[in-house]
Image 1 (cartoon, rainbow, N blue to C red):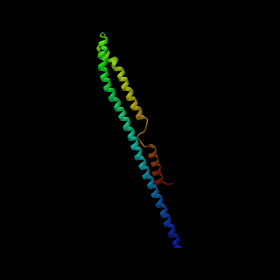
Image 2 (cartoon, one colour):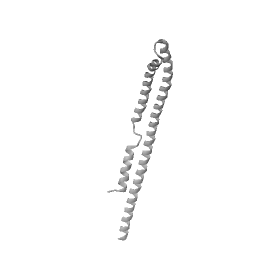
Image 3 (spheres, helix red, strand yellow):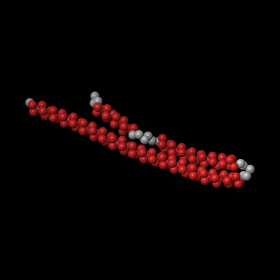
Length: 134
C-alpha cells in the first residue's frame, strides 16, 4: 500500500516538474522572439534614419548649389529684380523638395512600431499564468 502511495507522489512531482520546465522553456522562447523582433525593428529604424539623413543631406547640398547657380542666372537674366527676390524665387522650390524628402522619412518612421508589442503581451500573459495559475 505504501509503494502505491509513494509512486503516486513521484508521478505528481514529475508532472509538476515537467510543467515548470515547459513554462521555463516557453519563457525562454518568448524572450528569444522579443529579441528577434527588437533586432528587426532596429533594422527598420536604421533604414528609415538613413533615408531621412540621406534625403536631408542631398536636399541641403543640391539646394545650396542650385540656389547659388540659379539666383545669379536669374539676376543676370532679369537685372531689374533685386538679388533677394532672386534668392527667394530659387530657394522656395528647393526647400519644398527637401521638405518632401523629410516628410517621406518621417512617414517611414511612423509605418512601424519599434517595440515588440505582440511578444511582450504574450510574455506578460504567460508570467501572469505561471505566477497565478487559477
